[in-house]
Image (cartoon, rainbow, N blue to C red; front, side):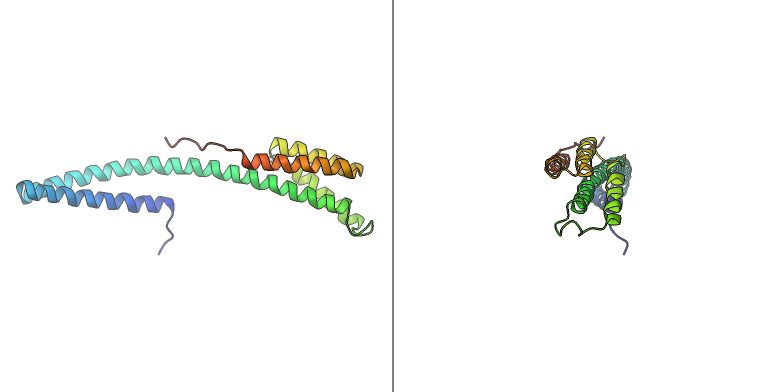
Length: 173
């Protein structure tokens, strides 16, 4: 059995409604006037329902795709903001290692620095997060532990605010 995608689920629901409307029309026609009325009423109500469900499906599918695109973009921006925080924290651990001054090799520190700058400069990173990350990176490059802790706190707050901000989805019509 194929997976149930939103388009397939909508197709199944509208097909079921069309079948039920056709059967209900035929039943009403049979009760009111007999076999010929059942045939005419069932076919006309079924055709009208099928046509209506076709138009509803097109609109609903288009609205679903717009909403899905907006949600995917928002999710990507949230994910990359979280990743900036992670990679900057990783660089901070290389600059101020807890195992002592020889806990991280200069090559590893340089690699973490390069990665942190590369990710923080990505175009998709939200503006406030990028600014806060730049402050942290400048403090880390200067070797100022107190300033880097304060800047990293500001980065955490910027990422948290970006994640918590509510963005309305596009309208369905």
